Length: 187
Length: 175
Image (tube, each protein chain N blue to C red):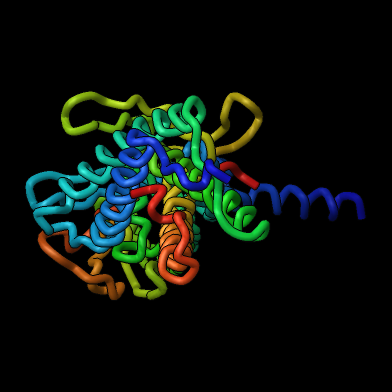
C-alpha cells in the first residue's frame, strides 16, 4: 500500500512542470502601472496614469492559452501631473469619473503569436460601455523574488478609440493609447 | 441712536462696492468659464483672469477686515431679530467669501503648482492636503459660490426692503 502511494505521489510530482510558474497571481500595485497617452492638439502627447487599480492573472508557461487576466481601474485616480487638467479630464466633458468610476478589462482569449508575444483579447468596460479589444502583450520574466515570493511580469499596449465607447471626439484626440505593466505575486 | 444716522466711512464704502462688483464678476466668469470648450480662445485666458482677480480680491478682503477692525461701523437698524439676522448674514458673507478664496486656491495648487497672477507674480502652491483635492475643493468652490450669491441677493433685497418699505437709513449708510 505504501509503495503504491509513493509511486503515485512520485508520478504526480513528475507530471508537474519543473519550472513551476503556472499559478494565479495578484497584481502587485506597487510594481504595476496603468499609463495613458493622448494627443494634444495633434502636436504632441499628454501622458498620465491611473494611480488606483487592482487585478489578478493566471499564467502557465506551458499552457499560455489558458492564461487569464482581469484589471479594475479606479478612473477617479487619473493623474496627468496637473491638478486642473485632472479635474477637467475627470469631469463630465471627458471620462465622467464620478459616474463611471470603474474601468475594467477581462480577458476572453489569450493567443501566443509567432514572435513569442501574446495577443490578449478581452472585454474592456470604459465610460459605461463594454467593447471587445485586443491587448498586445509580452511576458517579461518570472521566478523567485528575494523576499520569499514568486513573481511574474508582463507589459501590454492597446489603443482605445474613444468613439467606440460613446465619448465625444473633437480634434485629433480621438484615441487613447494604454501602456500597462503588470507584475504579479503568486497567491 | 445717533450711530444709525451716520453712514459707513468712505474707505469702507469703497471696499464694499468694489468687492460687490468683483464678486458678481468672478461668479459670472466662473459660471461661464467652466462650460468653455477646450478649443475656445478663452479656455486658458478666462481661468487665468478669474484666478488673478480672485487673489487680488483676497488681498483686498484681508485689508477690508483689517479696516473694519480698526474703524467704526454704524449700528444696524430694525427689530432685534432683524439686527441679529443682519449681523449673522454679514458674518456668514465673510466666511463664505474666505471659503471661496481657500477652496479656489486648493483647486489650482493641488499638484504643488503656484498660481500666476496677471503674469506679474506667482502665489506659491502648497501641494496636496487631501486625496482628490482638486475635485473636492472644486465641489466646495462651486456650492459655496452659489450660496454666497444667494445670500448676497438676500442681503441686497433686505437693503432695498429697508429703503423702500421701512424708508429708513439702511441702504443710504452704504451709499
